[in-house]
Image (cartoon, rainbow, N blue to C red):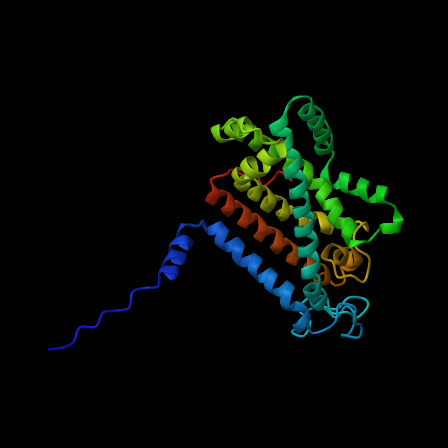
Length: 297
């Protein structure tokens, strides 16, 4: 009589992972894949890039696209592909750091404003509305100009400017979440216990507003590379020869008719990062049951 062998049961973790992937929206999976590729390049790129980001003599200037130089050679004989690879971690770090700082500041201000209310909320919201009324790029340029030429081109300044642009918008959403959560019974119980506003915000409001803040962070992070690139393109960002993508586009824009690939390389790379972040945000919002307007920067 033949022995009956039972097939090994699938591992619970693998089964849970497969079920989670089936439930996630397609936009989330595509966005996560694009972001994963960018993160891998950002972390490992400096180790396998064919040339240094400022290395000259990589080839004949403006020689166009080739297998050895997929994004061509700029006027200083630097390999554009290597510069794009080296600039990946710069763009991602500046964008995520500035957005994270804006999230921290905006969440604290918005949650306290929505919970305390009264004159404190009125005064704070008028100030926030004034900042939001200024176009985000104009506000960033004003902040850069106010900082002065002494700190121009400093990465820390770029991070602070990104945080300044996005903190008021995040604060507005955090305030709306705080007003809704403040009516819940567990917040009333915390008040009756005599907890301070800071304690209520940290223990009650913040954990229950996490999903809103997470979607806001992903949404703002999706547009942060565009803001960083815009500042670099206009000459208010990092200084040459830093391989920041917006700065690279600005450096090669005069060569658009001669060697368009030198502009298309960093431009398409920046576009793919923004598309990946936006797809990831849209999918994340669906998973968390939140609505998101991708046109609101």
